Length: 180
Image (cartoon, rainbow, N blue to C red; front, side, top):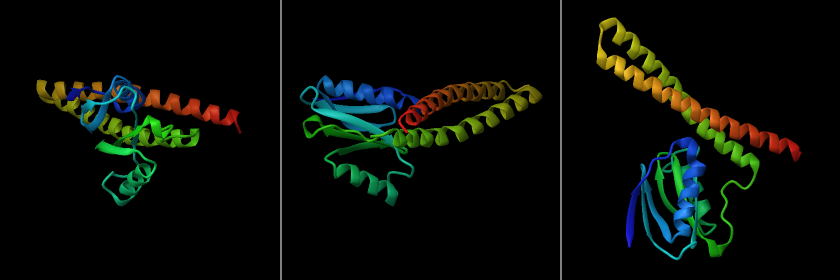
């Protein structure tokens, strides 16, 4: 039986999203499609699949993105879907462990990619928010003030997310130095 669940995760919560998808698989709900905040599952054996997601450096439709997807599929994983640069894979647990980030260097590179995506968004939101607030106050426009406040709120959320990602990255860098 197919089931659609709508659930929102922020980009910096990718590990939480991945864990939720694995928990669903452990309950016998295999991911068959992933779109914007929409996940489609079908019944399977509990624990039959492990799910992994990754943000690619290039678009999944680019030659580089397609090459990476084909590489992961060559390991026995199935491509399930994508959301912007995020790609979703599942692999039968009977086929062995399923890791996309096997070492700290690839985990750090993955985090840097997410940070490099979010940082410009935060800067643009800051600019849009300040611009709308200035226009709104100058013209006494409630709509602009409201839009400015919303942009500032998104900027704060993005800033908190970037802080979490940077903390994870720094911890991985410290761990890497311990083993060198």
